[in-house]
Structures are given as C-alpha cells and as structure tokens.
Length: 234
Image 1: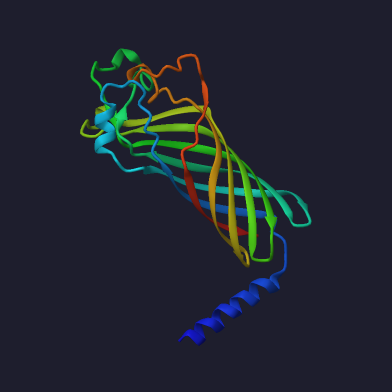
Image 2: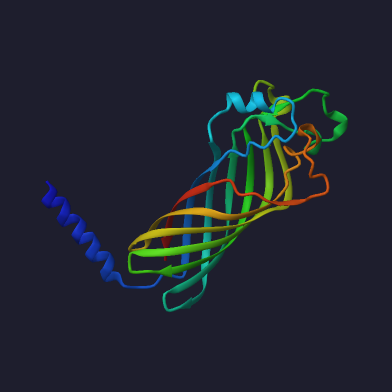
C-alpha cells in the first residue's frame, strides 16, 4: 500500500514540477479565517463577569472571496490587485450602543448585549507573490476593507432588536503574509495578519464601557488571526 501511495505522490510531484510556468493573469481566491476575540471592555462594570463565562480565546470568524488581475511580473515576482466580498462574525458577548445604528428617538432605555455581530465587507487588495520553486510560493497582501453592512442579533431579544444596518465607510488596512503550495493552477496556503490599523467601532467601543479614546478615530490593534486560502489561476 505504501508503495502505491509513493508512486502517486511521485507522479503528482513530477507533474507539478514539469509545469514550470509563472502564475497566470487571473487569480480567484477563497479564504476561511479565525481570529482571537477582542475582549477589551475598559471600565465596564460587568467586564469580570463577561470574561469569566467566556474563557475561550478564539471566536471571530472570517470568510472572503476575491478576484484579482495580474498587473506586474518580473522574474519570480508577480503582483495582483482586485476586489472581493467578505464577512466577519464576532461571537464575544458584549454591550453595544443601539443609538449608533438607529434613530435615537426609537432606542429603548435598556442595556443590550450582542454575541452575534456580523460585518459585510468589500476588500480591496494588492498581492505580491514570490515563487520559491514551481511548488512553493511566498505571499504578501495589503488589504483595505470598506464596511457595507452591520448585522446585529442580540440573544433572546427577537426581531425588534435584530437587523441589518447598511453603511459605507473605510474600516481597516491590513498586511498579511503567507506561504502557499502550488499544484498546477491550484494553490493552497496559510497566511497570518501581521499589521492591522482599524477604525474604532463605536457600536461596541463607546461610553457604555467607559472607552477613554473619545477623541481618537483609528487604532493599531492586531489580534492573532490565521486564514486558510485556496486559489485558482487562469
């Protein structure tokens, strides 16, 4: 059995090496990512309680699809740029400010928590690839997300307090680095975010939790994040 498996692996490896071509002009990618919770609650009175019953470290999830076009190539280097669509879901239960999302006239005077906070994003990316060999490719990506919609679903509150809220605002600028394995037109990779400059989200960072950054709009905050990527070139 091991002999047959070895033969198959050898044939696949020989086929991949024999391709010997640079990345094609178009690249379609799909990302699945997981990120550590952002558990910052500053001076919020119930912060110890919320941290105590949510001891897990990971719980912000990402899904992203991108179409990219090659704009530059030199020897082993290739540069792509493109657009996509992405979705982020944070599951850490925390208070939020209803008044940011809807007319304050209709806001009930009760404190709500959200443990299902989604964001629909429009990512604009520039990717640099360096081909170490016919099989291994290093990658770096500069990504900037525009926020298109927020999705709030407070536990146990029903449709009155749930909903989608459209917007259009620049949300972040990220630098991601990764390593990819290439077989023919397919690439399988793992990447990590190394820099993240983001707009402070006043839906969850506000006077309710005594956020002291009242005169600050952007922040440099980078919880650990990993993405599994699948790409197809043509």
